[in-house]
Image (cartoon, rainbow, N blue to C red; front, top):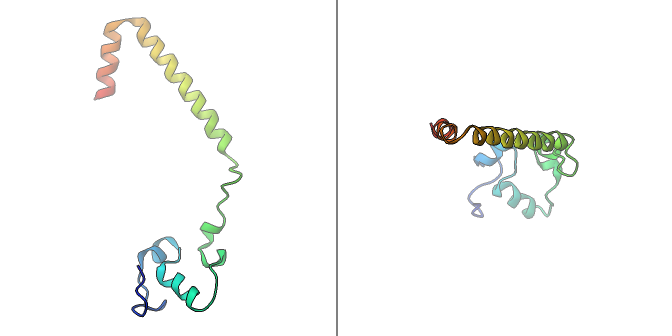
Amino acid sequence: MFVEGKKTPLECDCVIGRTHGLPCSCRINSFKGAGDHFQITHLAPFWSTLDYANPHDARRFEDNDANDLQIFHDLVAEVCRRGPSAVRAAKVALMS
């Protein structure tokens, strides 16, 4: 956390800024001290291009989830159809 007077933005060695391109408390405090506001341009370009409102491939993942669930249900039905020994063998396989 920023302790006023201890670090300037040039002295800052906070990990969050170096590794993720996000402003740390040192940078945010320097904005406030200068009467400036935090803006999207203060972020690394990666963060400003994220689009949570309209994920273009979300439908693909939803379809995969539904397909995977159907495959799982079919597999369970097949194991149950084969009887108790198949259920025990499936349990051993899953637990190993």
